[in-house]
Length: 367
Image (cartoon, rainbow, N blue to C red; front, side, top):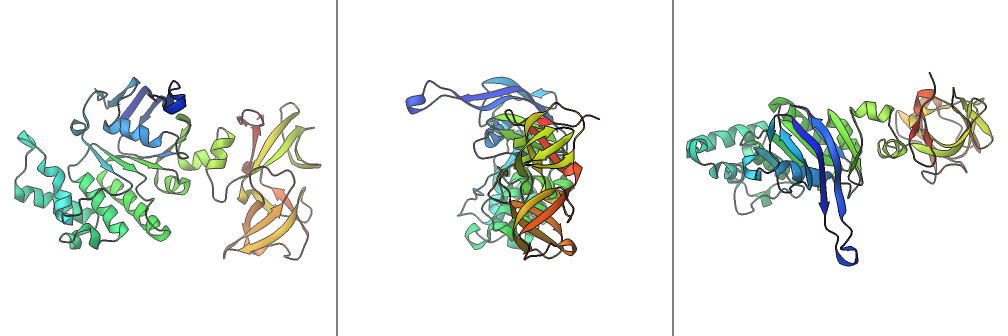
């Protein structure tokens, strides 16, 4: 089931002193979520991710534009008739019901030709529980489950009606780091096994990149870039996208294009083809540094943090604007002298990104 946003905008009335100023939560969404894919809506808090999800499931109605499931216009269709399953951040399980009863609950509301017998409902519940690997927990109450188990129950409840679209709203936020990793792997396994079109809302770029077929990066209600996770990481359209994706984040310096080179401070750090002289911002991914005693780029060495296979070289540079310190991730075999005051680097050209200083738009070298 593909989901199509056709120039969808959602506005909310202003509140308080600013009640005359409308808030645009979703601004002219115009894209298609492909059938059978897992798509991550990614962005900071307040960017409109959850609003977009609520528009898909019918809890909100667009101010303008249309929403389609395949060729069916569902813009005015009530939520219960859209065939969507939704999983919330807080699980929203019924505390007085067992796991089995929680999973069966959506089936009890089916009417007419879709109505099921008790035996059929139990069979569906058992099959769905097995899919999410909680078949041994069916008699327990939610209070007797861990956070990860409760999340699996919520997913089972959303899947038991075989939804056309599965919607996940920050489903991992309440889990600890290890459980988040395990649960996101489970979500991906379940999505691949069922083939249901899935939209996953998160502010965690690592989550989105690890399990999504496509990512929609959002800011202030607008789409900044859509693409495969690795493509967006390697080739962001602007500085916001470049800084939002990546752990550790990209290092951004004040720089300039001058005499066929990228310059940071007094150093020509990399050759640059084309482009007129300009003041720019230069982004260098942490993995884009090579320790080189004859390298063109010099930083003040702060510390070397051992991470096992890799080390993180922590430096300072007066032109850095994205964070207090520069972080370079290099192979442990190439670690610099920890007692040195300076460290010199060569740069990997494909890991260096240039942005217009005013607009943040990407500036690419001429081919």
